[in-house]
Length: 237
Figure 1: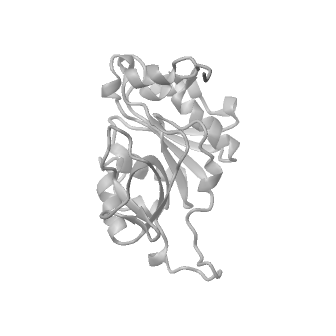
Figure 2: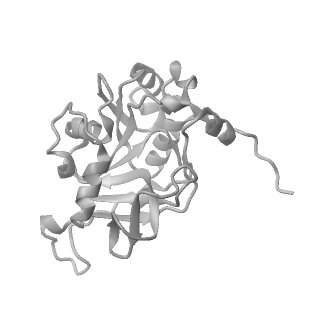
């Protein structure tokens, strides 16, 4: 399995820190956000990594290089302007191959996520070992988290049948997902395209599964949130 780290965003809410530094290179506990992902991917045996970038992207390449310092092999999908999530993935498809791949936003903080969980989420066979027809296979598997304060209504409902656009309980998409490449092939390379509408359409078709992730997850959106994560640990009283 290959991985793609989404690193093309401008990070407007993180200004002024992002005026001179791309958001994925901001540090938590002394380590750039994007490096946390790279190290955890390598730990899971996922060493082929694609990174898209636009704003201040050369800084990302200069910092990470070819990935050999982390035990990884990194290639870059360069965008003149950020193409949004679906557009960025579609543009990077030639680098990602024909098998399912995991995609993670480079600016979230998930220090303990075990990417080995992603390796067998999209099955080609039913529980009895029979091949599934292509139109019955899940096209994506999304990791959800409990709704944070800034997103109290969540994104999708999660139940025993998978994800739904309606119903309860609702959770927030963690910006971690496993996708089949055919999900994005209808989007021309270089086109701007958001992921949300595509997900909602395929959820209605019953083509997307998911699960709840209960570990540490932080969407690092503002300088205040970053400062809070970097506060010294205090011993319990």
